Amino acid sequence: MTIRPQDTATRDSRRLDGIWDFALDPDGRGRDEHWFAGPLPDARDMAVPASYNDLVPDPAVKNHVGDAWYQRTVRVPRGWAGERIVLHLESATHRATVWVDDVEVVSHEGGYTPFEADVTEHVTPGGTFRLTVVVNNELSFRSIPPGVVEDTEDGRRQTYWHDFFNYAGLHRSVRLHATPHDHVTDVTVVTGLDGSTGTVDWSVRASSQATPTVAAILRDTAGRVVEEGDAALVAGSASGTLTVPDVHRWAPGDGYLYDLEVRIVDGEEVLDSYHQSVGIRTVEVRGTELLINGEPFYVRGFGMHEDHDVIGKGHSDAHLVHDTELLHWIGANSLRTSHYPYSQDVLDHADRHGLVVIDEVAAVGQNMGLGGGIFGAQGYTTFSPETINDESREVHAQAIRELIHRDKNHPSVVLWSIANEPESDTEPAEDYFRPLFALTRELDPTRPVGFVNVMLAPHGKCRVSQFADVLMLNRYYGWYVHTGELAAAERAWTAELEAWAGDGKPIIVTEYGADTLAGLHSEPAEPWSEEYQVAYLEMNHKVFDSIDAVIGEHVWNFADFATKAGVMRVGGNKKGVFTRDRRPKTAAHALRRRWLAADRQG
Ligand code: GCB
Image (cartoon, rainbow, N blue to C red; front, top):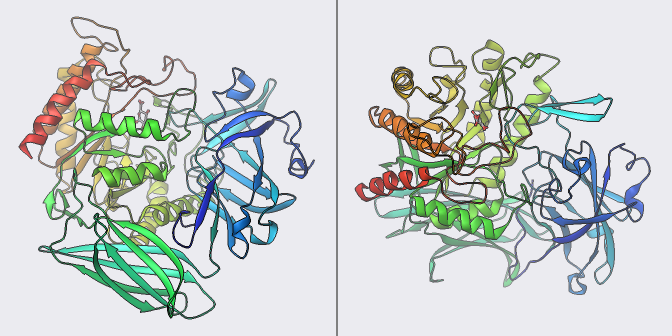
């Protein structure tokens, strides 16, 4: 597990982003041939961060299955002599192994969470080293998400059951950073409210030879110290509680953040200093309500994707700022990280902007009754010793551990989603998910837990929703069923939602949407037209407004996004309210009217 690199009084970090050498390895020879031991054969340029798939107009790159090698030379700052030097990768999709010169330093499974290696022994301050990363994009029944690779006459082909393109590469920043040898390894904050007083329970883990003290200093946005405390470091950990009178709460629409500085101190000497932003707020489910700071919260927004032209799933600050501005413009107060953990920059930004986040692991496609949004048997049994089994569940559990470890301190995160549309109407599904819910609650007792239910497992059939604190439903009445027949769709949808409401839990409709080709108009409104998307959303809103237990609406999707090619997708999934290049469809204006009006009513 990692802690994010920072520049502080005691720490320093360098981004290694830019143009790297790159080589595909379709035959899987590179590991045996020790490609890490010298310059990559036939290397071409590749940008980091970015998916590699769309940067070269060649199907061999776009649809590559297997290993892809990245390499660059890194200079270690001269001033880092005597420090602990760490290589940190924010994500490598879906797994990677890393070498420093000829030494293998770390491997990591899972495409959307960070990992690191202490490379102090292998590098020389003032000198350079050859950094090589092999990234592998193969999905299997032991990966999250699952998939199958087959050898065909035309090479290796990958099948997967999620409805977005299987982008791969170094999607987020790579950093080299320096910390003191006595250093903070983890910070956890849990906040509480008692009237106008806030509390911050903090705990710090540290690696230290000595047994010094940990000091915790909480500052407001003006930099004034609000409260401070300290505790002895015993067996690598220290904890305490800070009290904040007249607290400025973190709340939806008001992303107020305090700064918690934790210091390892030995007498007068500060051995390490690390900063953690803190939003003081509470989250609770009561009856059919989701309470933030004790007040009912109605969720408005989108299931999103990290997906852009050219860069694919690569992180870009400019796109993050733009997408957030569009969320504000349209009156959204929240998003779901469908269907994988997003860049930490997205979470930081949501904290600062008071956006609420449903945070999801990459468990998508665990449903052989579905394939990329298309109903129909895939010829496999979902949960079985040969397919998704106990070993897969351990991979899933590890993905949950890494997600919670990474995101536990974000005030914006109010709900964990541990899967999207898995098979959930069978006994094996119930057995698979029971321990995963228990694990999530054990790792984070402070937030509600749920999973996203699929239409194939309606009320009365679903055996997994019993474990969820909040019901999250994806439904396409008027699109995949009752296509173009909004009156029939409305009746069926209302009946289903009323049945779910009987469970007495809050319901968030996490997906509802209609594919819409920007610029296609029709009167009367026909499926695929901009008018139909508007009418479809209006029908849904009428249904939601009639059922008290519905406490949230996330339209699928914020923007059009890339998928694998198929007869159901015309240049990708077109359910976006914005096009892929973020131009508003007519529905954007309709949603904006509804959501801004709701905002005014509070
Ligand atoms: C779903 C999936 C989502 C798809 C969507 C669709 O239920 O959760 O990943 O993109 O349907 O458009 O079919």
